[in-house]
Length: 371
Ligand code: PEP
Ligand code: MN
Image 1: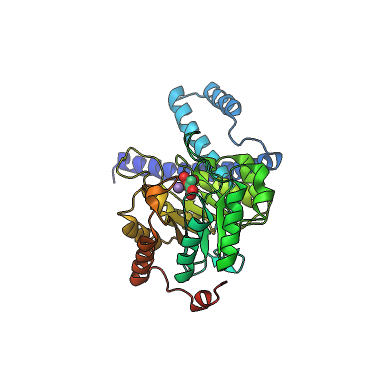
Image 2: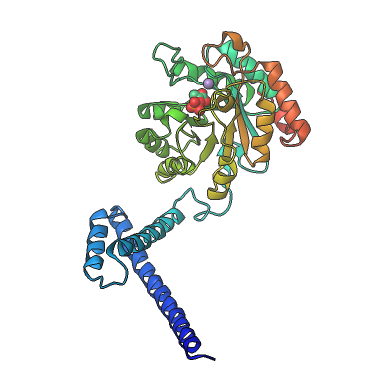
């Protein structure tokens, strides 16, 4: 073997050694960073400290004797700092109460005696807005006929225009409660004001927090302070992570009964009202133990593709779907274009049951009519 080959082998083995030393130092650095992260968490201070990062970089550059230039040193250490910050954030994510890392088993939300998130898929259906007792009763009768238990209806409507129908308010909640009790159903209804939370829980079985309020933190805190289950919809511009943090606001206040709902996000697509982010379903199921629903009405804004969209949602692992149903959609005071009538609703449910994606009704629940 030539002398130069010998030298090369020797240098290579030195490099291998230095690599291991660097790795060892990086691991040591990582352990220190994690400890700092723990202390910062206890103190409730920000993990990222740009001033400290600049100081560290300056100190390194001052000690740089080459052969790497200062820019390269800055770049390399910035990568190390970034990875360290991610290490701290990962730790933080692990401790989220909504995370599967914290709680590996699926959470089953009990809406009275109705379990959500067990193996049976659920359907939440009803009008966009509560308009009259007669209107709600027609939908409730249909739910009952089909052995479905969850009745929705908006009493407080967060409308885009202040001139549009704003809902019947407390009277709407009273109607929902009366009709639901008549048919042994559960009420899901949106609350928009933290101050209404105490009032709401007297009427509703599930508090809905709408897309427009997903980051209304005072509302989330108020929903966390009651013990009524919460149906939390994803904001139209919110990431999956932001949805989980919104749920964390509720759960961290002591209300663990949260159902997540993907309801479509805003994209450039115009043929649907929103774009259903189907990947959010398996992602949420993977990241979190909370039940996940898909709102097939607001995500699409149209009736003609509801069946395949519902199938996709259930096949992707959703624990249930939400759909807007109105006895006479053409005269609905809100979302007239997307609501389906009773016949279309019953066909949709029959078709879904036909595929096996939605189980047959529980005969006991059909028989135990409140009437
Ligand atoms: C609703 O479900 O009534 C509603 C307003 O939906 P979103 O908040 O998803 O727009
Ligand atoms: Mn609607």
